[in-house]
Image (cartoon, rainbow over all chains, first blue to last red; front, side, top):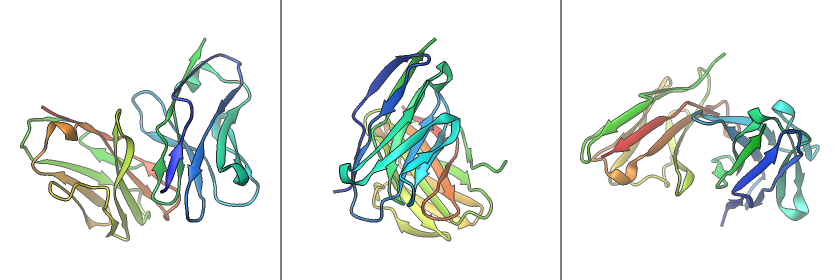
Length: 109
Length: 112
């Protein structure tokens, strides 16, 4: 079955801390991977995507993600978070997107 | 800055009433998706159109939900009759192809 698993339900960090959010997927077709962010009360915005090529993908707002095929993972990273990064983050796979359950990130000023 | 628009942004209705949500995809995008977001289930795909033709609506309760694209600038999602369990935020997304989607602001539906 196709699925996306985000291990962390809620992550709390202080400003300037490094971030890594886990995402593992199970998908039978061509792997297209995405990270979306949803700021409080807003719609989903695309952070970054991976279709092929360099497995290290850089997105907006200083985020990056690494596709590790052997681990079926696509973890999201940011070296130094800001209070404005407080949001919910969704990993997704496929064309008809299958979303993970989301990880709520709270950054303390 | 082209955006997906959705109306209404908020809708409160009573059980049994018909609800229609509208979406205007970004001009030139040929794929349209409807998603539902709840705390319990997260984000679920309800329906997917390409070039106005429905390709997949397997995520949608068929007895009460229907999705259409009367023309390239309008997608609709209808619930008739609505039930309290339909309360959720409904997102529309459009894309230039299957793999990149731009989301609208959502319609927050509350069924009393």
